[in-house]
Length: 412
Ligand code: MG
Image (cartoon, rainbow, N blue to C red; front, side, top):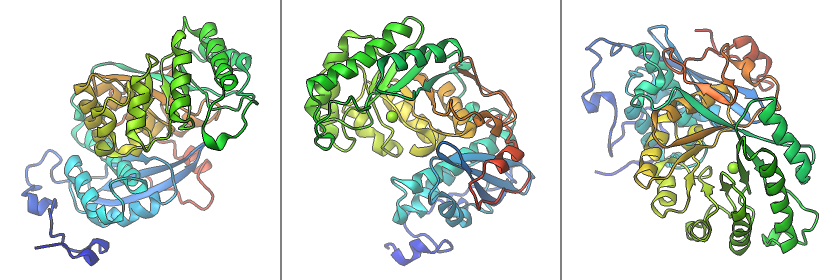
């Protein structure tokens, strides 16, 4: 008994610890209803968006293709290619078993956190699209059905001068009135001009007052029409985060995100429990195991997993279920193309505690061109009722916006 660690690097090696292959698990392909479908190929194409978006396609011998998306880009195509031998010949309906199989096979190569998890997530999302198409049900149905017909989307907002409170308020007004959102987020880790030394993470009082002036300007302008969150991107010391959160208590903000660096859960917990300002974190940690301490320590008022980063649709459902046992709502971080954004909306439809899904590309201009359907309308995503994710890639648009040197995947 024991693991031959050399085997972990051989995709064809027999796994000796806890083999989740179909053969070992007694899963057969003889019952029809899609049980006879086999995966034949997996391909990726990376899009040059305001983030790199790696689209993933899984092909089958039934001619049905599933589309997914992995968070970020670097390394994901290579890792996806590396995992192909673990999936070819398998039945795509066994989403959970196949995903755990990949985690186990890749555990020596980083599958508990980081880019390997996101590469697995891209496959896992494509399996949901594929399984939904085979079974002719929308992806949310695979997650247990839906709580809501449309998912609220919050718009991550930017201005040319992000330190100018009036410019932020003007942009908030424009996004609410012209684009139709009733939920927004602004950055609060913007320079005030009063910094002495940003490396020490300390906020001087004059800096806190500057941040309060941004929050005041935005919430006074649109607060009656929209919920507004503010993101600090892990910037401040424990004491400064406490003082900032206290200072913002007089404003009705949706949440204050990531005020302290993400590694120390004790500090995260202390900051959250020191203030009535709602505190959000979670986009830096992977899988349910990474999110577990944030939830069980009640280190957040709102948990913010990034679905295609954290491990996929079922993984996010599992995180949301754990969060729900602590009565913690879920605001899904998201910087993805329409593929993972709609997949996040399916998850949001299927969990009771969904607050919203982020949209991070409103200044890009061609984000929605990547699919044939309308995705976001007046700040909400109508949950598709078509099989799978319910979206169709526009391959001409995909080809137009590919990263230089990428190859377009095969047609369906
Ligand atoms: Mg954030």
